[in-house]
Length: 637
Image (cartoon, helix red, strand yellow):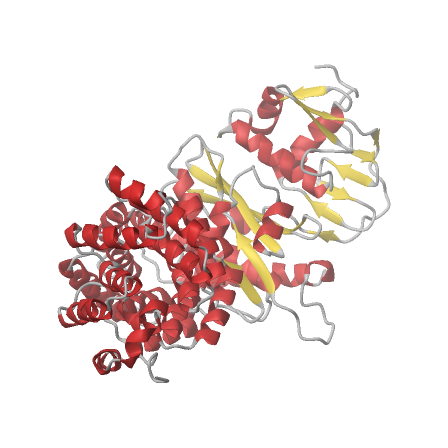
């Protein structure tokens, strides 16, 4: 490799920057930031060989040598990305660092090597510095409470010094009420050679979300993990992520492994507006870490972020376990739920509760996995109820437990009063949770409070825009509020992002009919028939697009429903089909039988506000039925 300089120098100047390799400090004349060690080493290497290409293999050898085993290709890309951001050089490099395809990188800006200036530098804002407390984080001690309290004092002292820099304090003393800040927490990137650590990276992000969500929802909105996970990876820039999610800040990080039997964890808080680093920290965690040490690490990261973005809020430790194997099984279970694999999620969460019978969150997790199954049975429902009650007995302050119990009360018990109580409790415990606001929107819709339903959905969308598009219930709620255009759009989005599913497929057809778009409705009806494996002749009778096409479709729907196994959608969708065919008596009989037999039907709570069923409100039988269920939708008839 040809060198543009004779060797290392005390400092380098380029553009408006001055860089000191010895201290890792980078100054632009106004502020000085301290780069994390690997980023500083990369910058020194590129500056020392400015004007020539430095290969990725040479960078790997310089940054890690033989001390740390990482997936160095991804690690190098992460370091280059971080360096470009701190230099405001753009995602692809424009002024300073040029990518040489399939080879490496070149520093292209003129560089002036020289001696370190004797002029005192501006006040240093500590970014990515590793302190003494970090170096002890990987020890296998069980972190007694006194030690944690001492660590909190140290952190408080450090944070006070950081907060004195008003540039990085969103609540600078302006005398005005601060606006609400939004943060997205991305899964921590696995830069090790071990694939399993990817789940740990997701778990870190999920737990930090759990810690940040409840602290100050009026001032700090936390984007839910569904949306954050969608934008993980190098394919998206921080600017893109921030604009897509409406986030002011992004917390990202990485997790690697070294040969001293410890994990190397890096956390970085980045401001979206100028893509500048606000705060960063390096941590070490023993490879055989205890769960208490792991939780202490999560609390440290969340505390730093909270104190920077909402200084007077406090982090409250979430439900956790001291059993390391139980914690890992729980993390795997939560991940499987997010991937819509309820069977695997149940296995892992049940394993976590067996390993630690006092781990409340594991019981809630198993109940959530059961309720997510498409072929839920009465036995499964009873099992889920027992698991939830056990979880709430162990931890009555679990927002997740109250959310799950509220969903069970609404969708399976058809008990609006009980659902309201649990949803309200979940919102008191974690008012910044998108899933709870979306579930609460379901209760509001069933209660015929359509204006409030819209407000709840709007808030849920701000907290988790991707999840709302992915949610099968969001299209349902828009349909119930007769916002057919939005219902069709959300149903289409769900089908595009998450694949075919009976609920959004059918809601899409009904929404198009509500808009009067009969040709499009017929087209989607044929698509649903193909998904449900209808005979070619039946599909042809609908695709002919004759005046009787929709009549043929609903007649076919009733025939296939009569042969299909019972499911949570069937009774109401069948009643809806009868209404479209003009047979109100059959629709009423179907609904009455479902209620009398206590069929598992997630849609029964909405029958009094279901658009096509509204004519039944003139029937005394239907009014008695809805009143028995506590539904007010027919009160105005």
